[in-house]
Image (cartoon, rainbow, N blue to C red; front, side, top):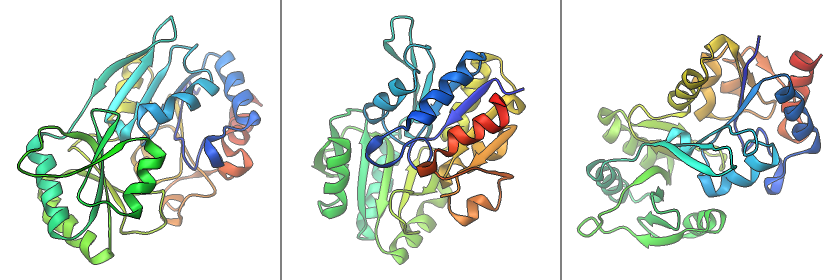
Length: 271
């Protein structure tokens, strides 16, 4: 029996322009009426996640939000106010190590700093300006000698040879690395601290509720969803997922544009 439904956001719950379909909203609320808990598990930061969370009633239901690939976990209280439950940032040493290597390999970077208003970049270009527009963060040029802040997550973009070299140079640190889903190119990666990913935080949420893995349904479409999809009792990949993800998941629903979340919940739970 499913007791918790965990949902990725981009490419899963939402369509274009941050929209959640009426079908998805209504179906999620129907599942909640049956006593099922809902949780968001996204790579987004909290400022870009709250609107989606409120659209599906997570604020009023006092439920959890896993953001930044597990970098920060929040929960709404009885007054629908957001509370930070836990957070995981790079040490300054690790942050500098990654940025120095990115700079040496002439790669672009964008960090989700603890301060939600800023991002540290190796260089300013079209890539960083696009992310600036999406995240509403001020771009600050990285200076290894003066930087004192760190971040939850780092996105790295560049040519495939540079990314491959970076991965090789930092692999001994055992950071969590995922193909970045927003740009369809294998040389885009996002990096989290060692041991920090969506599954790590989902396990914490499940423990808080006293829910077993086999009682969880998880919807996702990206590389950062793979571990969670394989850990839960019912992992459901979106039809728009990449082939390598669909090859390792038993259940595949309709695409995000065709309300795949609602379709599967109706088929498997409500009916």
